[in-house]
Image 1 (cartoon, rainbow, N blue to C red):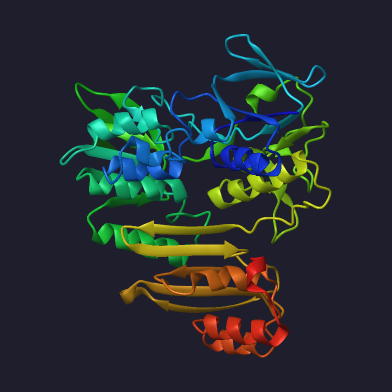
Image 2 (tube, rainbow, N blue to C red):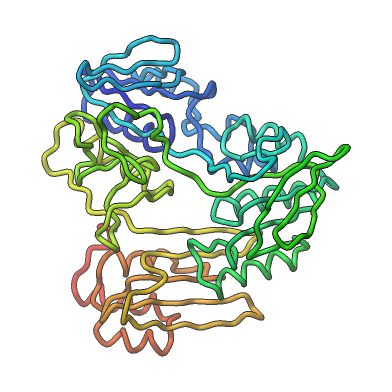
Length: 421
């Protein structure tokens, strides 16, 4: 049995290791299109600030980890899948046969349709090669514009700031991290960053990028012009599905999968950022481009590829935990709330403290917090455990900071097993 995994990120690596634990005899191959060993993109900002070296970004630090687990690494790009023949075609025209296939190709940065976006001084921070280029240029006094203040943008923001660069952020949303934070929370993060000396333009778009004599000229839709040595683009990502054209595999925002993470074609599965899987909170199928979902998918896909009949995907909860220059922010589940739902919040902007709880009847379904450094996991537990709050609903409405008390009281009352989440 030959299990082939396309993609050397967290989903692919976890799937390969899980398969090896399930079957000591099968053949396992991971195909990745970068020259480095499998690494974590989330570690790149730590590389930029020289907290780790390149090897510190690797998903597995043991030199012979994959070899010792009899997992073959192939460094090539897959250009085509031929399901009828159960073959893959690589960029060098080699064909690779598979019995079971997992597509874990992740996502790629979106390049906005802006004049000048292809200039050599415009970087993404998505690959180790990107990070090498940025590391050489980000230094005290260099002028840098960061395009996008979403989750990934804010992680890059910290690395650029700590390099000593003169940093300006341009975000088209009306607040920072608009896809994980409401207005109060997003604007608190903005104020925190501005207090550190970062210039931030929200509700603003870059309309053009042009090379001057020795600097970049960045024009905004406010008619303001910024000058920079280079630009880092963090304007969102899209699932890597282009190579699936003519494969017969159904795609939408990502690869469509069922609750076994199977595609519409037998023996082909998908996991991670590329998979359009079940959302725990909504019951709908969507792409959740976060690492916890990728690793969960990797384990589940491996179980199903190995023949498990009971490995059912129960859905992943949308969750984000972000550290921006020491300010902790998090959001879980339906943080925007539900129709006719209730919410409770406490807001202390002077101390950069905020908590917002969203309820659907007696259940907590979403949460947002700024400056909450304890009991963050309890928010996830209450939501994902679907714990009926009873009288604790009213208590949390009056004081949303009593989440730990509510969790302990309700889980003990119902005999809830915390290990399920």
